[in-house]
Length: 472
Image (tube, rainbow, N blue to C red; front, top):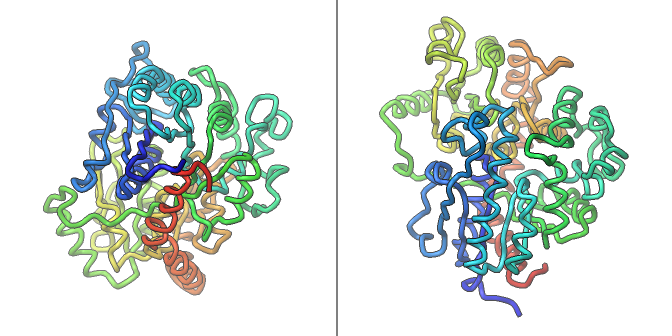
């Protein structure tokens, strides 16, 4: 018998990366707006860094704080609770700590008897929790449906399976046997394939590979939710359902809403930043931002800086202070601020990204090609200047180029790039005839990506129907 929305209780358990926790938060808030009770589980420091739950949702949406499990000293820094807190080679140890949340999560779920658990990619033990607690299990993927299709079905995620179709990294530079409908350009480059193959298929210090984690979640779940929509990825969504042989439920793009003034604590410097933006020509500025997950090397930061100088395009750069820099001055090439004075602004630390992207002087964004950032940028119809760094970002970049939405920065065979590569991509995407073609396609995309009614009403209503009835 179908349940009323107000009777539904859902427990959400994201992986400890903000590129996962934020979409889970957005999904949770969307469900809570519909009257669903949502319990969102994470660790203390992460919850303190997540958005505050809006007061109007407090009766339906709650954070559940569980202590971060400890593993032997030396493996993780003190207070490390998310991927942003650790170096890349420490992430397997973060997964190991995350696996120790199994028992406390099971205890909480057992005490609450929710209707559904919605889990992430890493928690391969969640099917056992759901079975023991008699809850249904949905896997929510924060990646594109195209990326999911490229990774493939369960049978090719075990060691025996991937050795049949992807025994070497080179196999990731072309479409898999099941990927016929995918565009042949949407594949990894050689340097990306080498990193992905090792990181995805090989067992790490946690004792299990990422591929095996995903396989176990897919085998044990009742449905897969994907942060996408049929208006943008219809063929990939349909192909993935055929591959996993389970319901695949698009939840929409969950486009963020620009925060109201005062929602974020902004000091006086932002008055000056937005005054500068107000003085720029309409649709002339490029926003530069690479998030917090990938730590740019010194040579990478400096080449981006020199590329901005060469391009002579007005810019605003939200730069996370690099770990290799002793102070803010060392974060950028000597004299960069003087040479670009009046032409651009660098903001080191937190930036109000949504507010900047919504400003009428912004036309494009140079960024890492993460799916969440693509959604934020395209909802405003901005052009994409793509410099992918890790995991799915290379495939995302190629998909956006194939759809005419941006320009990817050229790189050498080892993945390196130069200031000239940065400048060339910026000029192509921001100036001239090619830039105008991209602009036209980006504005078409904005009609889908920025349609709050489509995603918050149309898609979320269908998600609720599925959760109530267990089928579409």
